[in-house]
Image (cartoon, rainbow, N blue to C red; front, side, top):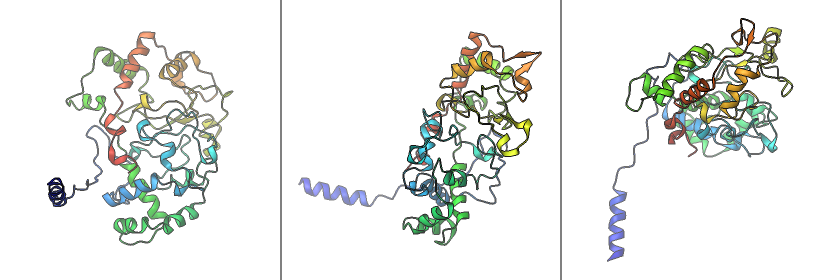
Length: 339
Protein backbone atom coordinates (compact mmCIF):
# COMPACT_ATOMS: atom_id res chain seq x y z
CA UNK A 1 0.00 0.00 0.00
CA UNK A 2 2.82 2.42 0.90
CA UNK A 3 4.47 1.78 -2.46
CA UNK A 4 1.20 2.50 -4.25
CA UNK A 5 0.78 5.78 -2.37
CA UNK A 6 4.33 6.82 -3.26
CA UNK A 7 3.77 5.99 -6.93
CA UNK A 8 0.53 7.97 -7.03
CA UNK A 9 2.20 10.91 -5.29
CA UNK A 10 5.04 10.84 -7.78
CA UNK A 11 2.60 10.81 -10.70
CA UNK A 12 0.65 13.72 -9.27
CA UNK A 13 3.86 15.69 -8.71
CA UNK A 14 5.01 15.05 -12.26
CA UNK A 15 1.75 16.51 -13.53
CA UNK A 16 2.33 19.81 -11.75
CA UNK A 17 3.39 22.67 -14.04
CA UNK A 18 7.01 23.65 -13.77
CA UNK A 19 7.72 26.73 -11.69
CA UNK A 20 7.77 29.74 -13.97
CA UNK A 21 11.19 31.10 -14.70
CA UNK A 22 11.56 34.58 -13.28
CA UNK A 23 11.36 37.15 -16.03
CA UNK A 24 14.36 39.46 -15.69
CA UNK A 25 13.66 43.11 -16.38
CA UNK A 26 15.61 46.25 -15.59
CA UNK A 27 13.36 48.53 -13.55
CA UNK A 28 14.61 51.93 -12.41
CA UNK A 29 13.86 52.44 -8.71
CA UNK A 30 11.37 55.27 -8.23
CA UNK A 31 13.80 57.36 -6.17
CA UNK A 32 16.77 56.89 -8.53
CA UNK A 33 17.88 59.15 -11.39
CA UNK A 34 17.99 57.88 -14.95
CA UNK A 35 20.80 55.36 -15.54
CA UNK A 36 23.83 56.44 -17.53
CA UNK A 37 24.38 53.00 -19.10
CA UNK A 38 22.79 52.75 -22.54
CA UNK A 39 20.45 49.82 -22.13
CA UNK A 40 19.46 50.02 -25.81
CA UNK A 41 22.90 48.79 -26.86
CA UNK A 42 22.63 45.76 -24.59
CA UNK A 43 18.98 44.95 -23.81
CA UNK A 44 18.72 42.81 -20.71
CA UNK A 45 17.00 39.45 -21.16
CA UNK A 46 16.45 36.55 -18.83
CA UNK A 47 18.75 34.38 -20.94
CA UNK A 48 21.45 37.04 -21.09
CA UNK A 49 21.28 37.63 -17.36
CA UNK A 50 21.61 33.91 -16.63
CA UNK A 51 24.54 33.60 -19.02
CA UNK A 52 26.22 36.55 -17.34
CA UNK A 53 25.59 35.11 -13.90
CA UNK A 54 27.10 31.77 -14.92
CA UNK A 55 30.19 33.50 -16.30
CA UNK A 56 30.50 35.67 -13.19
CA UNK A 57 30.72 32.63 -10.93
CA UNK A 58 32.76 30.42 -13.28
CA UNK A 59 36.47 30.07 -12.40
CA UNK A 60 37.11 29.07 -16.00
CA UNK A 61 37.95 32.72 -16.67
CA UNK A 62 41.08 32.51 -14.49
CA UNK A 63 44.37 31.04 -15.65
CA UNK A 64 44.20 27.85 -13.59
CA UNK A 65 40.45 27.67 -12.95
CA UNK A 66 40.84 28.52 -9.28
CA UNK A 67 38.96 31.80 -8.87
CA UNK A 68 35.95 33.51 -10.36
CA UNK A 69 34.65 37.07 -10.29
CA UNK A 70 32.48 35.92 -7.39
CA UNK A 71 35.56 34.93 -5.38
CA UNK A 72 36.36 38.58 -4.66
CA UNK A 73 32.83 39.93 -5.04
CA UNK A 74 30.64 38.13 -2.52
CA UNK A 75 26.93 38.83 -2.46
CA UNK A 76 26.52 38.87 1.32
CA UNK A 77 29.05 41.73 1.41
CA UNK A 78 27.36 43.69 -1.41
CA UNK A 79 29.74 41.95 -3.82
CA UNK A 80 32.93 43.06 -2.09
CA UNK A 81 35.63 40.75 -0.68
CA UNK A 82 34.39 40.38 2.88
CA UNK A 83 37.04 40.89 5.55
CA UNK A 84 39.91 41.38 3.09
CA UNK A 85 41.73 44.68 3.03
CA UNK A 86 43.19 43.81 -0.38
CA UNK A 87 41.72 41.37 -2.87
CA UNK A 88 43.22 37.88 -3.09
CA UNK A 89 43.88 36.66 -6.61
CA UNK A 90 45.27 33.61 -8.32
CA UNK A 91 47.94 31.65 -6.41
CA UNK A 92 46.69 33.53 -3.33
CA UNK A 93 48.45 36.66 -4.47
CA UNK A 94 47.54 39.95 -2.84
CA UNK A 95 46.01 42.54 -5.12
CA UNK A 96 46.80 46.23 -4.93
CA UNK A 97 43.39 47.49 -3.83
CA UNK A 98 40.27 46.67 -1.91
CA UNK A 99 37.56 45.06 -4.06
CA UNK A 100 34.85 47.65 -4.74
CA UNK A 101 31.21 46.59 -4.42
CA UNK A 102 29.18 45.65 -7.46
CA UNK A 103 25.84 47.42 -7.17
CA UNK A 104 23.93 50.06 -9.09
CA UNK A 105 26.58 50.08 -11.82
CA UNK A 106 24.06 51.31 -14.39
CA UNK A 107 24.51 54.72 -12.75
CA UNK A 108 28.33 54.76 -12.90
CA UNK A 109 30.28 56.40 -15.70
CA UNK A 110 33.70 55.22 -14.52
CA UNK A 111 34.89 52.02 -12.87
CA UNK A 112 37.61 51.01 -10.41
CA UNK A 113 39.04 53.20 -7.69
CA UNK A 114 41.00 55.24 -10.23
CA UNK A 115 38.30 55.41 -12.90
CA UNK A 116 40.55 53.67 -15.39
CA UNK A 117 37.63 52.19 -17.35
CA UNK A 118 34.68 54.15 -18.73
CA UNK A 119 32.57 51.33 -20.16
CA UNK A 120 30.99 48.59 -18.06
CA UNK A 121 31.16 46.24 -21.06
CA UNK A 122 34.96 46.50 -20.99
CA UNK A 123 35.39 46.43 -17.22
CA UNK A 124 35.83 42.62 -16.81
CA UNK A 125 38.89 42.63 -19.06
CA UNK A 126 41.02 44.27 -16.37
CA UNK A 127 40.57 41.64 -13.62
CA UNK A 128 40.73 38.77 -16.12
CA UNK A 129 44.12 39.90 -17.43
CA UNK A 130 45.56 41.34 -14.21
CA UNK A 131 48.41 39.00 -13.11
CA UNK A 132 47.47 39.58 -9.45
CA UNK A 133 43.83 38.70 -10.02
CA UNK A 134 42.76 36.13 -12.64
CA UNK A 135 45.96 36.24 -14.74
CA UNK A 136 44.43 35.00 -17.97
CA UNK A 137 44.73 36.21 -21.53
CA UNK A 138 41.29 37.40 -22.66
CA UNK A 139 41.48 35.42 -25.91
CA UNK A 140 42.27 32.25 -23.97
CA UNK A 141 39.41 32.90 -21.57
CA UNK A 142 36.98 33.27 -24.48
CA UNK A 143 38.38 30.13 -26.07
CA UNK A 144 37.81 28.16 -22.86
CA UNK A 145 34.22 29.36 -22.73
CA UNK A 146 33.83 28.41 -26.40
CA UNK A 147 35.10 24.88 -25.69
CA UNK A 148 32.83 24.36 -22.69
CA UNK A 149 29.73 22.41 -23.73
CA UNK A 150 27.47 24.11 -21.20
CA UNK A 151 27.80 27.50 -22.83
CA UNK A 152 26.74 26.79 -26.43
CA UNK A 153 23.00 26.54 -25.66
CA UNK A 154 23.18 29.55 -23.34
CA UNK A 155 24.77 31.73 -26.03
CA UNK A 156 22.23 30.51 -28.57
CA UNK A 157 19.31 31.37 -26.32
CA UNK A 158 20.78 34.79 -25.59
CA UNK A 159 22.16 35.85 -28.96
CA UNK A 160 20.47 33.56 -31.48
CA UNK A 161 23.50 31.42 -32.29
CA UNK A 162 26.08 29.34 -30.46
CA UNK A 163 28.92 31.64 -31.55
CA UNK A 164 31.03 32.72 -28.56
CA UNK A 165 32.72 36.07 -29.04
CA UNK A 166 34.47 38.48 -26.71
CA UNK A 167 31.75 41.08 -27.26
CA UNK A 168 28.95 38.65 -26.44
CA UNK A 169 30.68 37.31 -23.35
CA UNK A 170 31.33 40.78 -21.97
CA UNK A 171 27.82 42.02 -22.70
CA UNK A 172 26.32 39.03 -20.91
CA UNK A 173 28.46 39.77 -17.88
CA UNK A 174 27.26 43.37 -18.01
CA UNK A 175 23.66 42.17 -18.00
CA UNK A 176 24.24 40.33 -14.74
CA UNK A 177 26.06 43.25 -13.11
CA UNK A 178 23.42 45.74 -14.28
CA UNK A 179 20.80 43.74 -12.41
CA UNK A 180 22.73 44.02 -9.15
CA UNK A 181 20.48 46.86 -8.03
CA UNK A 182 20.33 47.84 -4.38
CA UNK A 183 17.31 50.05 -3.72
CA UNK A 184 15.24 48.35 -1.04
CA UNK A 185 16.90 49.48 2.18
CA UNK A 186 14.98 50.98 5.05
CA UNK A 187 16.20 54.36 3.84
CA UNK A 188 14.61 53.72 0.43
CA UNK A 189 11.34 52.77 2.05
CA UNK A 190 11.54 55.93 4.15
CA UNK A 191 11.98 58.27 1.17
CA UNK A 192 9.35 56.40 -0.85
CA UNK A 193 7.00 56.46 2.15
CA UNK A 194 6.62 52.69 2.09
CA UNK A 195 5.85 50.30 4.92
CA UNK A 196 8.95 49.39 6.92
CA UNK A 197 10.60 52.76 6.36
CA UNK A 198 10.27 54.16 9.84
CA UNK A 199 13.28 55.85 11.43
CA UNK A 200 13.92 56.29 15.14
CA UNK A 201 15.12 59.58 16.60
CA UNK A 202 18.81 58.66 16.40
CA UNK A 203 18.53 57.67 12.73
CA UNK A 204 16.65 60.86 11.88
CA UNK A 205 19.28 62.94 13.65
CA UNK A 206 22.02 60.98 11.88
CA UNK A 207 20.43 61.66 8.49
CA UNK A 208 20.42 65.37 9.26
CA UNK A 209 24.06 65.39 10.37
CA UNK A 210 25.00 63.30 7.34
CA UNK A 211 23.29 65.72 4.96
CA UNK A 212 25.10 68.64 6.60
CA UNK A 213 28.58 67.17 6.85
CA UNK A 214 28.93 64.21 4.47
CA UNK A 215 26.55 64.65 1.54
CA UNK A 216 28.72 67.06 -0.43
CA UNK A 217 30.60 64.00 -1.71
CA UNK A 218 28.23 61.16 -0.81
CA UNK A 219 25.25 62.83 -2.40
CA UNK A 220 21.92 61.84 -3.85
CA UNK A 221 20.16 58.51 -3.83
CA UNK A 222 23.35 56.75 -4.93
CA UNK A 223 25.32 58.26 -2.02
CA UNK A 224 28.20 59.30 -4.24
CA UNK A 225 28.90 62.00 -6.79
CA UNK A 226 31.38 59.55 -8.41
CA UNK A 227 34.08 62.23 -8.46
CA UNK A 228 37.74 61.66 -7.58
CA UNK A 229 39.00 63.22 -4.36
CA UNK A 230 41.98 63.12 -2.05
CA UNK A 231 40.54 62.42 1.40
CA UNK A 232 43.72 62.93 3.37
CA UNK A 233 44.96 59.39 3.89
CA UNK A 234 48.54 58.86 4.98
CA UNK A 235 50.76 57.58 2.16
CA UNK A 236 53.23 55.91 4.48
CA UNK A 237 50.87 52.95 4.56
CA UNK A 238 50.22 52.75 0.83
CA UNK A 239 51.81 54.84 -1.92
CA UNK A 240 49.11 54.15 -4.50
CA UNK A 241 48.72 57.45 -6.38
CA UNK A 242 45.17 56.70 -7.51
CA UNK A 243 43.69 58.75 -10.34
CA UNK A 244 47.15 60.08 -11.19
CA UNK A 245 48.06 56.63 -12.55
CA UNK A 246 45.41 57.13 -15.24
CA UNK A 247 45.72 60.82 -16.09
CA UNK A 248 49.38 61.50 -15.18
CA UNK A 249 48.12 64.85 -14.00
CA UNK A 250 49.73 66.02 -10.76
CA UNK A 251 46.42 67.58 -9.73
CA UNK A 252 44.97 64.06 -9.55
CA UNK A 253 47.64 62.78 -7.17
CA UNK A 254 46.24 60.47 -4.51
CA UNK A 255 42.67 61.01 -5.62
CA UNK A 256 40.26 58.07 -5.59
CA UNK A 257 36.69 57.59 -6.65
CA UNK A 258 34.11 58.52 -4.02
CA UNK A 259 32.42 55.20 -3.14
CA UNK A 260 28.71 54.77 -2.65
CA UNK A 261 27.75 54.30 0.98
CA UNK A 262 24.86 51.98 0.26
CA UNK A 263 25.28 48.76 2.27
CA UNK A 264 28.32 50.36 3.90
CA UNK A 265 27.76 48.43 7.12
CA UNK A 266 28.38 45.26 5.07
CA UNK A 267 31.29 46.31 2.86
CA UNK A 268 34.20 46.70 5.26
CA UNK A 269 37.11 47.06 5.36
CA UNK A 270 37.07 50.58 3.98
CA UNK A 271 39.08 52.88 1.68
CA UNK A 272 40.86 51.89 -1.52
CA UNK A 273 43.36 49.85 0.45
CA UNK A 274 41.04 48.50 3.16
CA UNK A 275 43.03 50.16 5.93
CA UNK A 276 40.02 50.80 8.19
CA UNK A 277 38.04 47.84 9.45
CA UNK A 278 35.24 49.69 11.22
CA UNK A 279 33.03 52.71 10.63
CA UNK A 280 34.37 54.12 13.89
CA UNK A 281 37.86 54.18 12.39
CA UNK A 282 36.55 55.89 9.27
CA UNK A 283 34.81 58.62 11.26
CA UNK A 284 37.90 59.10 13.45
CA UNK A 285 39.97 59.57 10.30
CA UNK A 286 37.70 62.37 9.08
CA UNK A 287 37.70 64.14 12.44
CA UNK A 288 41.29 63.64 13.62
CA UNK A 289 43.38 61.69 11.11
CA UNK A 290 43.58 63.79 7.96
CA UNK A 291 46.99 64.53 6.45
CA UNK A 292 47.37 67.90 4.76
CA UNK A 293 48.51 67.47 1.15
CA UNK A 294 48.68 69.61 -2.01
CA UNK A 295 45.70 67.83 -3.58
CA UNK A 296 43.63 67.42 -0.41
CA UNK A 297 39.97 68.05 -1.15
CA UNK A 298 39.16 71.62 -0.11
CA UNK A 299 35.98 70.44 1.64
CA UNK A 300 38.24 68.76 4.18
CA UNK A 301 40.18 71.93 4.97
CA UNK A 302 37.95 74.88 5.53
CA UNK A 303 38.90 78.08 7.30
CA UNK A 304 42.38 76.66 7.72
CA UNK A 305 41.16 73.74 9.81
CA UNK A 306 41.64 70.11 8.84
CA UNK A 307 38.83 67.61 9.14
CA UNK A 308 35.10 67.47 9.81
CA UNK A 309 33.90 68.48 13.24
CA UNK A 310 31.81 65.71 14.75
CA UNK A 311 30.90 65.13 18.37
CA UNK A 312 30.79 61.60 19.73
CA UNK A 313 27.00 61.82 19.72
CA UNK A 314 26.97 62.89 16.08
CA UNK A 315 29.24 59.98 15.16
CA UNK A 316 26.83 57.53 16.77
CA UNK A 317 23.93 59.17 14.98
CA UNK A 318 25.70 58.98 11.62
CA UNK A 319 26.43 55.29 12.17
CA UNK A 320 22.78 54.69 13.04
CA UNK A 321 21.74 56.37 9.81
CA UNK A 322 24.31 54.53 7.70
CA UNK A 323 22.92 51.22 8.89
CA UNK A 324 19.55 52.14 7.37
CA UNK A 325 21.29 51.91 3.97
CA UNK A 326 21.69 48.12 4.30
CA UNK A 327 19.52 46.30 1.78
CA UNK A 328 18.80 42.75 2.92
CA UNK A 329 16.72 42.09 -0.18
CA UNK A 330 19.76 42.73 -2.35
CA UNK A 331 22.20 40.90 -0.09
CA UNK A 332 20.02 37.77 -0.11
CA UNK A 333 18.47 37.91 -3.57
CA UNK A 334 18.50 34.31 -4.79
CA UNK A 335 18.68 35.26 -8.45
CA UNK A 336 22.01 37.01 -7.87
CA UNK A 337 23.54 34.01 -6.08
CA UNK A 338 25.62 31.25 -7.58
CA UNK A 339 23.18 28.65 -8.87
